[in-house]
Image (cartoon, rainbow, N blue to C red):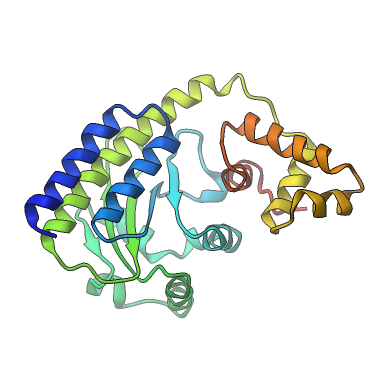
Length: 246
């Protein structure tokens, strides 16, 4: 892709993001825009412990479902070298940079090997440091190396705006969060089984309740959490309540 095309992709994203009114729509837009630049996945996050995520932190991602769940279960945010490096620099870097490759612990090397197995091979990371906000990072990831400097520049522009817009939309969402209710024990139990890949029918058999009741519990959980998909409900419930304990 030429430099002008890359820059235009960034400008088109920024203009469209200004009109986006929710985090889910913003995520879809960013994913679609980065796909035009040759990338498959992204994560826009605050560099904090994900199992104690503060209300005003950012956690917005499109990674393979199995990898997202596995990452959270293993608490890989505590050893993720990409997040660690993001805390110490404000300059974007790609994952072939020697600061990423050299000095990995054995545990970190296993983490990168497992990420590659999940299709997360090459990435560009844009650290975000804004006064008054948690430090953050935007990772744009794919299966193939992208070495075009114009692409990385476009990703830098898009990522800075992406994070800023995500923070603002998150703040707006928090203002309406008071209207949401706590998840019931049964709703949490159903989400635990959803996270294990079980269908409504399978969950109904495990819990000895009607299939339609299982479906209702999951739909209620989605509504309370303010999300639209089951995976989002599982991830958000995990971050808020440590879904996989007990």
